Length: 139
Image 1 (cartoon, one colour):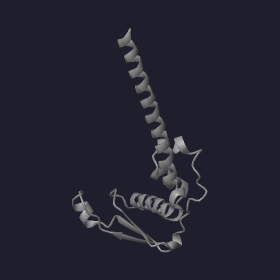
Image 2 (spheres, helix red, strand yellow):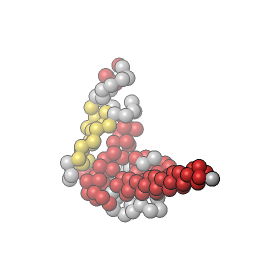
Image 3 (tube, rainbow, N blue to C red):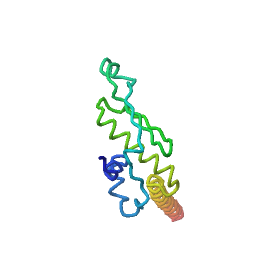
Image 4 (cartoon, helix red, strand yellow):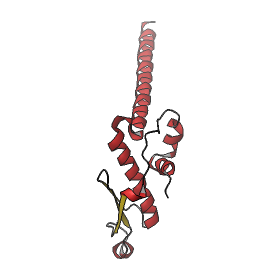
């Protein structure tokens, strides 16, 4: 059984998780029920040569209640692709069900707030520098 918190941590970078874990609401994050999933293994495409062409290590997951479909072929390993696919599926389900209150949206809002604060600080310092240069010219 896959733990949803472990999958969530993998879908979000480690620095993002540790930075925002206290200000993000994870209470509405969905939990995957294995009975609601339809899993298929298909042949992947792309670089990898004969190994990719002969093995079915691409994972296609379908969440039956919502109809959300995820395809993952990021690795040559089937178990790793299954884990990554479940992580992507959880994120998509969270975005679908919770919209603006999804974990990804909350993280984006926090990052935007941080970026705007950084931009405002830069602008303030730029104005102070311009004023200082004008005073230097006057004297």
